[in-house]
Image (cartoon, rainbow, N blue to C red; front, top):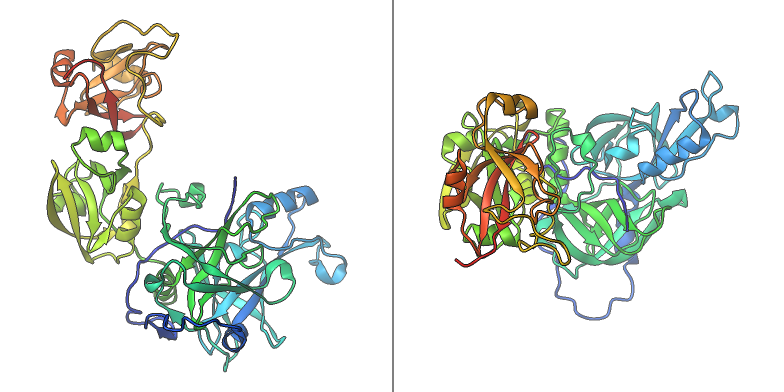
Length: 515
């Protein structure tokens, strides 16, 4: 399956408009679902919506030496840049005679004086560079040059401004009140064919583990996702356009699809950034010029069935804290490594990315209540958040230490002789020495046992590599093999805290034998 995206997802959960920012029209009343009779037309509602939808065109002078094929590849990589074409004549060329690449997307008018919402990727060039021109075309045919007022790469949101007044505006609803099955409409200019409306339902909400964002754009390893999923047809050029409810209110911004086609055709799996994120991002961009996000100063990882079992938990929901900076907010408030965060304020945490999103949805300086499980017992810890941009190791997901996908067979694979028995069959662990630290480039303050050899037939060969350090076994620090042997539980899933290539993480290890 090919993931077609344009998204670097989310920055704020739901919240009030807050002070400052552009005066966006907002209606937070729930959708009226009382009409259960057959509806024969939405034409009157859409007549009010469509005038507030615009086409967004971009131009960029093609760098010298960039082939036509490379232009197309780069534009397809951006997915939603819309149609790209080599300009046919001098009128569409720059002063040096180089052709111009065109991109097309969509947008929503937020204010009568010309603030427009769209996707950030719509106003980027084929190499993610700033474009040479942004132009907006209204439904009535008028065209304006647009100024970029601000953009945010982590949410793929941009705000434009055109110099006019008296415009029709798009009213925003509260996306947190959406329900699966609600009717929605995607409005935009797909493939530059002209303004188009497609129809579907809300297929799901809160999609937060799709990995739609290219993490190379993030740099800090953190992504923000909280998508609305819909089967309303979304195609290239729809990007930045509104997803509206049956009352004509914007509930999301069309931003990504999944497709089996390299051309990115819709197969009924589309994603929109919810209005609850859009409101806060727009406010921050128009007031501060950037998006402010809170941070705990921890690294977290997902819980799978094996880790949950090893830690005595009955659910995989939550974010397991595997690194805490004692000088940052979470550490100073009392959060400990091994805590499992199950709620941020009153919102459930079902994954590491969800926790990161919920924390980053709050401004620096805000206080959040974390519900954590510690040794299986719940407790609430209040944390005053720092600024994410100023925190090294902000709330981030951990890298999987060894790329493990499932627990190995501790008795060896069928037809393969298992290595010699031992507490961790086929692994050689040695106490850390200066020579071993130098050989594997390990920090001087790291303690534990370093893996110096992994037998190819070891049932743990997919979990461990030479140079990894076992720091803890079942929540207890270890510095000798005697301690390891004393702490491992035969016939059970054990949890090891390991260091690998600059990252810490928890690894479940299943041992053979009887308890």
